[in-house]
Image 1 (cartoon, helix red, strand yellow):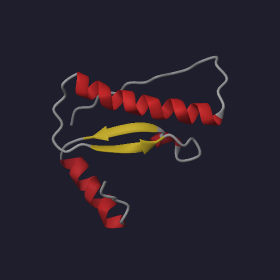
Image 2 (cartoon, rainbow, N blue to C red):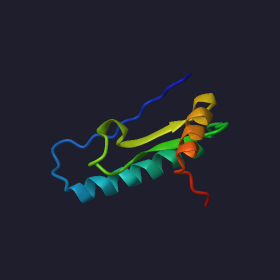
Image 3 (cartoon, rainbow, N blue to C red):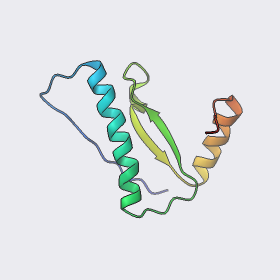
Length: 86
């Protein structure tokens, strides 16, 4: 499975919890848009993450998972009952 990782680091700027959460949300949107602009071919994408810094820090931000693992993980989430059709 291929993996590319991109980071955005802010150093030396004091940010409130609310500001950090807002920035994380904007970075998530920008990352998904960048995939589209780059013309990436996604088969079965699953986006997992959050912008709430009070939750698990290792999931802070956004993880985009594609392929068989995304399908497996998506099914597990559906089994838990959190999936909501839009």
